[in-house]
Image (cartoon, rainbow, N blue to C red):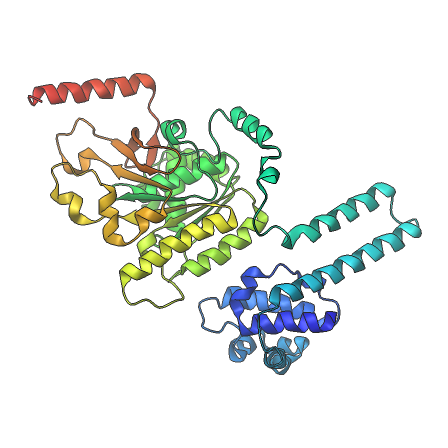
Length: 444
């Protein structure tokens, strides 16, 4: 039966490649045919390399990539045989369970045999058996959970939150936002939106660095800038260097010193950048799933929503954006990550006297507003008004905050370095006084 289960799992994946996203079996669990372990490895590699193709397991593609090495897994003939002998994918999860059960039993037998022969210490036997017990739980975590179970340890969770000084999740770039709405919570979809050239990308770069410094792994899917452009911006931000100097290489000795310090800091952070052309939301999910296995505490940033495509076809752009935003929320909940996406803001705000974006400006782009848990608008008065008393200041407007509330906080923005700066209480007071004086001078 184990042989049939292995053939059924591989055949189902060949029939429906997206099942690899739900495949928790590892190659070493395939035991009945020595080819099967290698086939699963090969399919995973092909799925990653040819994810933009309609059929990543197309024989021509695989032969082109692996050449004669494909014969080690039985050649394309055996792969096609596995596919054709699998009538349905309906029992995919059941067959995975059979393979996992067989693997665990074999491993237990090995442990017992080694223990009998005196090759394992009692403590090591216990440790290995506990690891197998955890492995058994892998596919048992789905479905409704009884409330009494959820309440177990709830008091401990609250106590742990207290030690975080009110910040639950990854810290944000803005200290005031951390205080007002809390840190980044897994399972949430957050939209950061503004008109062009206000500083959306630079803001999330600052936010990524802060989250990474807080001990979280960060993945940025960049559809606007190349990987190296993002790296340049990060170095400029951390090092306090004019990013144009980095772009053209015209740096002073002091700049190079700052550059070296920035490199040292950034290289120790778990930050990943992906600039794959024509990126789809399904691709983003697959990559997130892989990263989540390595990094339980994971933040996802996407720059930006309207540029993300899909493997599905849609009648128009609005329907596609609706799909992307809903799919992104599902990624956050299903994979237990925080997703932060940049979004464009409609032109309507430009026609108003007060040009601060409103939630209604997002409605032009579909259901983004309703899908998001948190919406942060960026507004710079000096972008519109040359005589603004708010030069170098960005308003972060929390226009929507499911379970956390709304409000506005201020940050300083150094356009040359891309740094967002937290103000002290005294600085915030001075800004407030300047605004009051400006309003009085205008007769307000």
